[in-house]
Image (cartoon, rainbow, N blue to C red; front, side, top):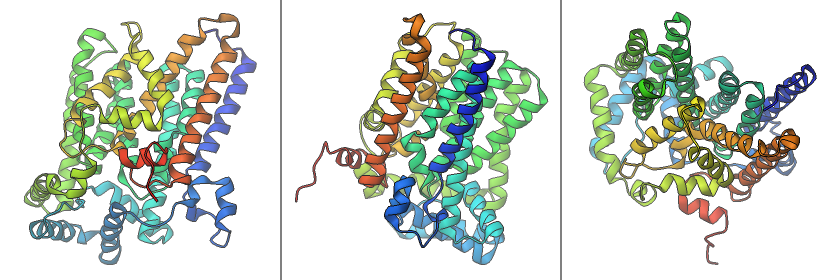
Length: 423
């Protein structure tokens, strides 16, 4: 790629601000608009506004948060104990309240703005997906420069699963933000060994990741594999301090969670109840099963061109493509763990791959554009614009016209009219 001129740098900066502003707007929750405005009028400018009702998971999170609001944060141990008792009585799995950070963020939001529990959680989801967009652009910039940041920001701004998570009181978009930060900060620590700023940030993010959801284990495994493989691929320098930070961060998160959950016994009992009852949950059996390539099928249904381009990059990887290797190994390592969870596959859990996949997809676009040096810039711009249009259309089809709540294969097939509901 040719070096951008000062004029093009200014244009890129303006475009980046515009793209980020548009992405933030698309992530605003529907209730942020005037309650008196006609629904069809809001939907013309904000596609997420057609989403109504409340899903099962949202109802559970709302119930937990309502209890915290009514009884204070001191009631959290009692919430955990009630969950343990409930799981002993019922045959199906219930969402555990030990996903503390999401609920705590909703509690803080309520205290600051007085929002009802469900609205507070939706606002948190929306704000955090906005932060994910900003972090994606910043991470891409650190990896490959402003042009890549611009392209990745454009693709993330309209990523269907990101927009979907911004409109619901679901934890997976919230979790994806901390997963992305942990991946980014690992890269920075490899590039700047023994930087106490990056080490501290890395430890903090890993602790917050552990406080968010049990899926933090999948991310942590992928990060450890990246650290191990660094010996051969040399992304940067692994120091003793980095190894300690990789272990210390999750331990700190678990220690804080133990304190809020009311002790080690409560936390262990809550997770044991989840592990035992989850495979018995009929909904999970019906919707969370499938072969190892289940995630690939769902990703192909939602973002087919992004996935194809990302695979294109994967097939031309070499040792000189450090950022692409870093992203590919993270996705592959976490994928291997996640696709082996019995009755535990759902495209919502793959939100943490959104930025890496779009980074890899743009790498393939760059490779294709480099074949025509004279028109390289035009090809890059045209390809990114076309791909963002396709991605946004996918979101409209899936989440507005259908509209979709649960990102399971059957619903995706029906939303795309591959499967037709009989009259």
